[in-house]
Length: 294
Image 1: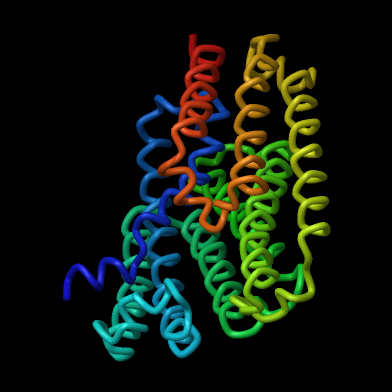
Image 2: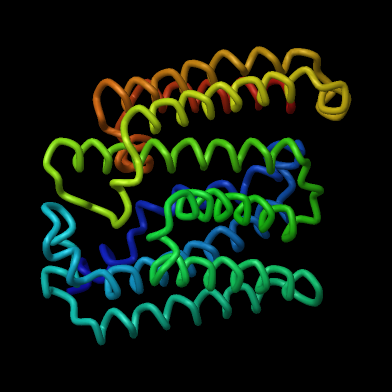
């Protein structure tokens, strides 16, 4: 039972909440213990809220999940966890998130943190109930969710979040969301099975063009970021452009997984299992650490 409850929370998806660390990382303050601790608290507060939404999603979609080849094995869809237990866990995660934030943050910071968490929560509940059935709206909501993670990281540390970070986070999340939807389109065109409503409003030609355009914009935007006078001055190094190599390699690899291997259905699973992308990320982080901190 405990294992199934943990599966219901989808803790492996918490890796996406690592975006709250971006303001801290790019500011060069990663070694500031106070900032780091505040960001860790924000990470877990956001993760608990996200897990609450996963519980609600599995409860709301239980009938559809039972007809799905893979989702039918989820704790609630399989019957291993009752809806009542799912609702209880959902509420517990929200309470835990609020208590954690309330115990650490104070004043305006606490109100802003709770405001971001509430906005994210309401937006995603609406997404689960209705908005995910609207073409394009669904992927844009996912992208906004990642921007909220970044903004939360800025709020709890007091670090200014630049337009560069917001823009690149939004574009990258949009790219990953469209790549994920592409897998649903492939299944629909091969089997006629609608894994999501309105998937038939997409086709492979459209999806390929969209993710290619987004990948191009992301790369151009990132290069502009690394050579921006403002950023070079703030980072204190003219060599930021070197990190573009790892971003380009990672994007090309993800396009290969998406278009050739059709394995982009879960960005989290790709991140946790693809060694090439993991190597690109590690090399990117190490290069930034050297440039910023040494």
